[in-house]
Amino acid sequence: MARLRVQDAERRQGTNPDFLEALARGLAVLQAFGPDRRQMTLAEVARQVDLPRATVRRALITLTELGHVESDGRLFRLTPGVLRLAAAYLGSNGASTILQPWCERLSLELGGPCSAAVLDGEEIVFVAYGQPTRMASVTTMVGWRLPAFCTALGRVLLAGLPDAELDTFLAALEPAPVTPQTELDRRRIRARIQAARREGFALVDQEAEIGFRSLAVPLRRYDGRVIAALNLGLHTERGTAAALRETALPVLRAAAEEIGALLV
Image 1: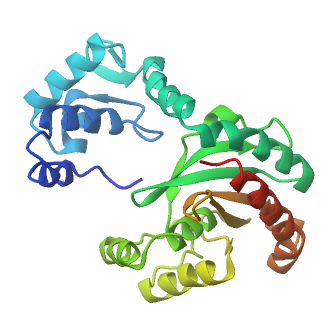
Image 2 (image 1 turned 90 degrees about the vertical axis):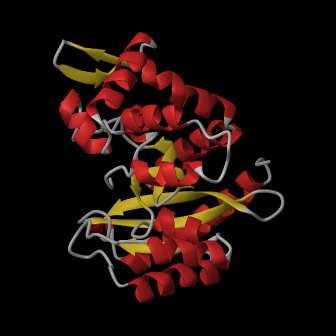
Image 3 (image 1 turned 120 degrees about the vertical axis):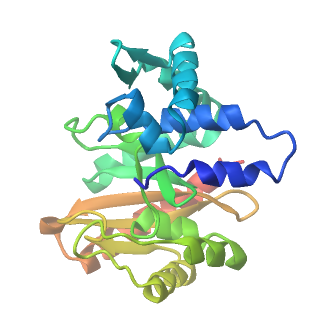
C-alpha cells in the first residue's frame, strides 16, 4: 500500500471551512498501521504519517482512550475496537449484505475464490468474499486492499468512471510493479481499462499475483451506475485465460444481472 500523504488531507482543508484537521490527522494515524506495520513506536508512526511527534502523541492517546489503540508503554498497536468502524460500514452498506451470499455460492459453483470490491481512491477494497474451501478465512479478506490499476476488479471499476475522473486518476497514478507481469505503461493501462468498458469485463493474467488469473464484471444498480465489481480468481494450472473466460464469464454476467436488480 502506498505511504500515507497527510499533505493531501491538508490541501483538501482549504476547500471547506468546516474541515477538521485534527480528525483527519487522527484517521491518518489509524491508517498508518497495516500488515507490515502491526506495531510501531511513537517515532515510527510520526515518520509514517509525516507529522510532528507531539501531534501524533496526542492522536495516539486519544485513540487509546477511545479503545482503538493499545500500548505497552513503547509500542502502539490497533485493538479489535477498530473493527467497529468497519462493522458500521458493512452493516450500513446493503451491497455487502447482498454480495456475501452470492460470492459464497459462485465460489462453490465455479471452484475458485469469488470476491466483490468497491473503488476507494487508487485501491479496491473487498466487501465480500467466498472460497470453495475454508483454507482462507473470509474475515481476513473483507477489507483487504489492492491497487486498482493492475487488478481485474479495479479495471472494471475504473472503466465505470466518467472520462474526466478516469483522466484525473491516470494523471496522478504512479504505477509500481506488484509482479514481473504488472503493466506499468499508462497508455497501455488506459487501453486495458477502455477495453474493459467496451467489452464489459476485465481479465488480468498474473499482474497482481504470480500464478493467479482473475476475471471481473461490473455490478450496476438500477440507474446503470457501476457501484461494485464481481470477480473470480483461479490458479494458472487450472487452465488458460481463454478457458477462464469461456467458462466463468457467462456465469458471472448472469449473476451480475440478478444482483443488479437488488442494488439500490
